[in-house]
Length: 113
Image (cartoon, rainbow, N blue to C red):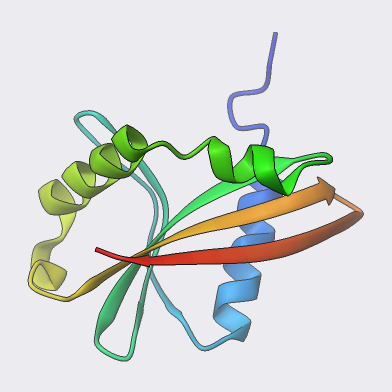
């Protein structure tokens, strides 16, 4: 049986990375009809929605795992749960964590929405 959330360590690493770079956490594992947002931050009046993808060896595989339909689902979740952040500009990030828990790298890919 596979663990419920096998990539938690990668999300923890991403959370630490973003906080170290001045982002303020506003939500983690935000669930609503149709999906989930791994991490949501606010920085400089902008909301940053982060999809964390962990792969052992391939940065490309991590990036390809986030399809346009996945981005649309994340946005739908956000607009169901945004509350006071509803009118903030949104940036979408794929946070690719490549490697294993004791030896990994983090790459961030940003897209304005």
